[in-house]
Image 1 (cartoon, one colour):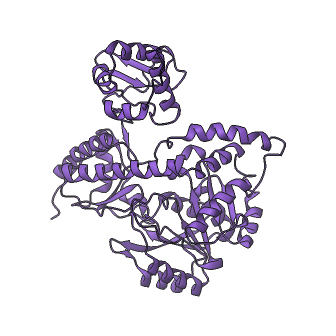
Image 2 (cartoon, one colour; image 1 turned 30 degrees about the vertical axis):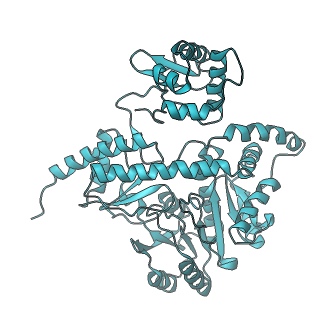
Image 3 (cartoon, helix red, strand yellow; image 1 turned 60 degrees about the vertical axis):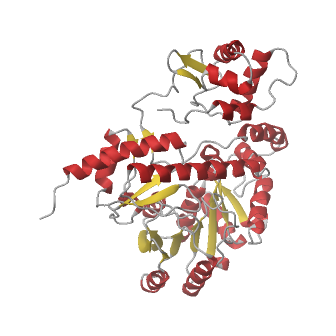
Length: 467
């Protein structure tokens, strides 16, 4: 299975643009244009290239020129080919004939990790960051709050979304999960209760348990948040902290409206309960209308964000937006875990945040993948139901029977890795639910759901009626 799918000849021709630019050395110019698209992230490793005849027709050149360009790319290790299977992109600098990324049948499709590859344009940001790094080399490289330029750009984004923020209210972390771990370490003692959604992000539950605290779940249904249940939990359980996702919720995809945010903020303020709002998915909004303003409960709200879904998980960067007093306390707590985030990655992210184009492209790609996954589920698993989310990375499917765990086990034998619904629950259950992320290319998603449908048929066929 090709992780990134096949690019069509017309699409590749569009990407290459005016690649000749008057050059008489057509093969060299074409090879250089393809290399540029690979280095810029537009042609990920593993992408299968069009047939020579199709590409020659799309570019209006001879097949001889296409063959000569491919020979150059194979010599440089950027392309590998095999008779009967075509050509595909390989990592720059690999040896000729490298087949590690050949689309082989029988490879597992990972639908557990809902993370996309890097956004196109990241290499340009890396190049720009190299120049900015010179200024940093005369400093120690340590800093528990993070680089000022990155904090300024994150603060500016919050201000643009309607929540005035200064760089002094931002701390750079090693991802949103790291940010939540710091907060739990600071605010929750062993035995304390932490209010969470049910279902919710599994790693957040692990962080709570890792701090020897107790998750207190409040059910979240297809219609949205149970504010009466949240109010009752705040009153009866007296949680020390709350962890909630209000933007394209993981895993349901729900988005809390402005009225709901105001109501939730009032409940938390009244109970004097600090809340961590996970904004990891907030930038993946597919709608034409602006997303709701950031959640704001004043001194009681701590917002955590991440570049993992919007730009690339390999940067391993996130942030905390909170009051200066809270950040001061977090800084002291952080010394027990680490001494700051990598400087170079911060410079790269600062460059990416200055350019809206990578994020725009990310939204377009993910929306297309969402639609492809929805079509695949309707085609291969018509008994399943789901709500089409307006952003985020997943469909939260309702299954026709309580079979989620069994399906995850069966799907593994069909080459698909799944996370059962129980992983998203504080105390198990959710056997009629399954999260399907749309972080893969459309053709991969269709193949994944086709395999899942076979596994589902096997599970239901082996199920015995309850007597």
